[in-house]
Length: 309
Image (cartoon, rainbow, N blue to C red):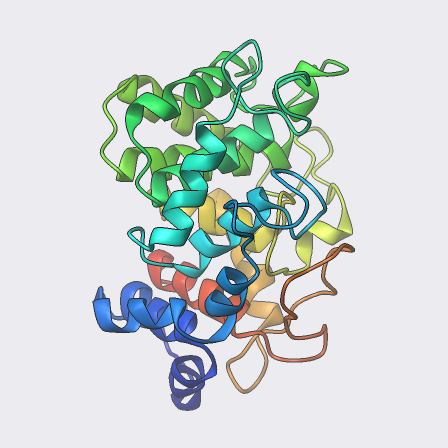
């Protein structure tokens, strides 16, 4: 993979999180000093500064979008914040020690609501990242595994209005959660998790990430645009990142997504993102015509994994 000579310097300078992720994802260096800097300045520090004394953000666990506890913890995990950061780890405990829905999972409205498989997939990501013990993740994991569909994926509507076909949004969130769970070394149902992850990855690959498996047409044009943070939504960047992080890097069905990345790369080696998803935010990210360092970092990480120039 050829990287424009100015891009890595830009990524190292723009924010402590991108400086750390360059070392970790592009140079195979897990630098603890760089990682510690994420909590001290930049986006990571701003997110931590918005934390309430009770360990929540926003108005609570799932409201509002995107300043809630749930989405802030997910954002911090995506930034690469140190798993031992005490404020984040404490907030994860607040979430996972809270009352659960009847099936052991987490619901947007608390225990009186129905569990949502997308929410629980994302909770697996930040719970595993920030060192939650297996015992408090069991209910979340079991709920997600219960909602697997015959086509290999999952759909958040399965516990609400019902669903007959998996969702690329929900399936990607769950792939990320399974990968984080396995990387953390949890043993509870680990073999089932690995098998479920493979099936979920295959679901995305059958769709060439963003195409109808029946017609081959792009499911939604928005899926071919790049976003950071992605929140719960799918786009080709997030799909490629999830699938390649799960270890699938040579499948021909990745080619359409990789072509999108190559086409969206600017002459200076950077990538811009689409307009952010509507909602309240703690911090601002670059606009749609500005180079986005987090999108650029993710794109370079994907190209490096797949060996694509």
